[in-house]
Length: 224
Image (tube, rainbow, N blue to C red; front, top):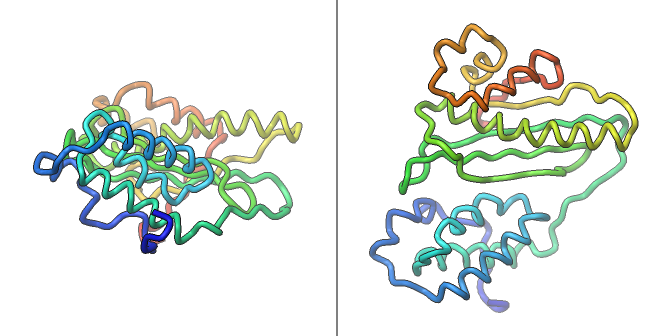
């Protein structure tokens, strides 16, 4: 595909629901498909902009269809366009770790699970990112955002410990940007826990981090 036409976006909107059209699509070589997805997964380590578009077709490696192969090849065509792009790190004062987290709600047409996404930046560029399907089905948008924030905070705890060892000092609070006010209220106010017993208890550890001021939550508008 070296001479193929490049694409300006990593995935088209009509390919976001890959599970809906799979039944009417023909099967493809599973070995070739797995090799392609494996290569793209390796590339995600330095290309945060293709995180979701690689995560979506990777769910179908056991029985890939033609529509899944088309989605994977579309990512290659996008990579061809941005082959010279990269993350640029420049010197900055201080060590401020900031994070953005988000999720859709019941985005998977196959099992109605949501997809979480987060990214961490320090200085001029991102240093960690992820896009993956949630392990449980969220019953509301706030719950989906809450689970996404919880998954990201696990990464935040690890990064804070790592950076504290590297710079030999205590870090300032990590800034968390979230576009759901209900999620922020749930994280900051213990009174809301009576209304959220259906959320698994393992997600509530993030509240302890907020209470200890290791993390601070800031509202950011969805358009931003």
